[in-house]
Length: 411
Ligand SMILES: NC(=O)c1ccc[n+]([C@@H]2O[C@H](COP(=O)([O-])OP(=O)(O)OC[C@H]3O[C@@H](n4cnc5c(N)ncnc54)[C@H](O)[C@@H]3O)[C@@H](O)[C@H]2O)c1
Image (cartoon, rainbow, N blue to C red; front, side, top):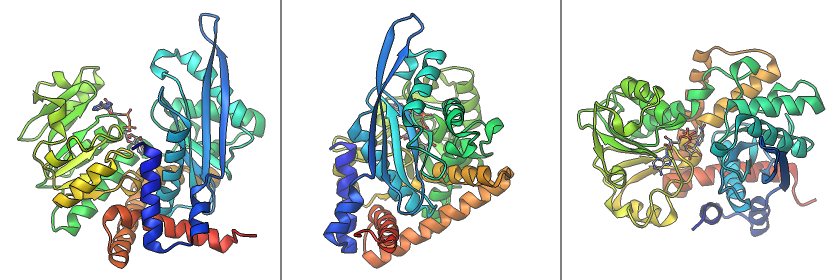
């Protein structure tokens, strides 16, 4: 089942639980606008190359649409649609005044030079600048894009509309980015984990963790869990996986990675089979890499008691069912990884205020939003008698549905 089908399935289940009117349900599912553009650029060798870019604006009932831009060869209309819809529910779960959007360009960023990436980003921005805006649709980085990409979008957009720092979030600090944004998704994952464990009378200190993915989200989550006394017993990335039952020295592993060495060559741990990583014994499993990694083939072998979906869509519906039957508690992506978009919201607020917050304030506000969303999800679980995924989906949907009805959607 692809990401769009799985997201729509969760949406329909939540809509049924809430007893939404079928016309309203249909209207909430249909995207506001789907943009497809051809981006042609001169390559460094003088030839021309063309790439397809997408921006799907899903819903704006609660505020400007918000979502990342992904550069990846598998970017297509279906995937961007699913991720745009997920952003609508995610911003509503986090209770920030945004709707949902997503964008992407079908390309292999690793095969393009820096100047080719810059030209591609500028051409994409030229094609969509009239359809995005500080109070319309605010992009951010996603897979294959970063703060530099946002700086190019800011610059190109500002040529048409004047200096507009709030047009993108996840920018470099020197161009109005927020302190704490880089760590925000990983930090939010840790706040979410803390809230879930506390609910079950447990804490980070004294629990064991396995982390798949050691990029932005995984490495920050690992570092903050480690600082709070969590024992990270295995870590994996695209190069391989390592384990140490006494706990991996995470600061040393980060240093090792920053020196350009492969994870599997880290001296303070033993290597392990990558497919063993997700089914190894632990208290908490954090998938922080790709979608669909927990599926029908491995779900019944998972031994973790808790799964925190730090990646987008890591558990496919078949695995979701198997894991639920086994009693594994899953904290869903639309809540668990919302820390990034929450701090993106703080960045946008700071740009509009023309005022910079210190990092402590950013982290403190992030904790408030994550804890409040967790409590709201638990209330939905109680009132709807459902699991955490449906608690999060019904929470997000009910907020968007209320805003839609209040605005008057049938006229
Ligand atoms: N960065 C954010 O703010 C943010 C916010 C919300 C959700 N997410 C989601 O979190 C996930 C990770 O994002 P990121 O920003 O950390 O990306 P990243 O590119 O910084 O890191 C990805 C990590 O996954 C690893 N990986 C890739 N293929 C793998 C494989 N086959 N097996 C094991 N590991 C593999 C890579 O080696 C890398 O360590 C994605 O699903 C993304 O959509 C990210």
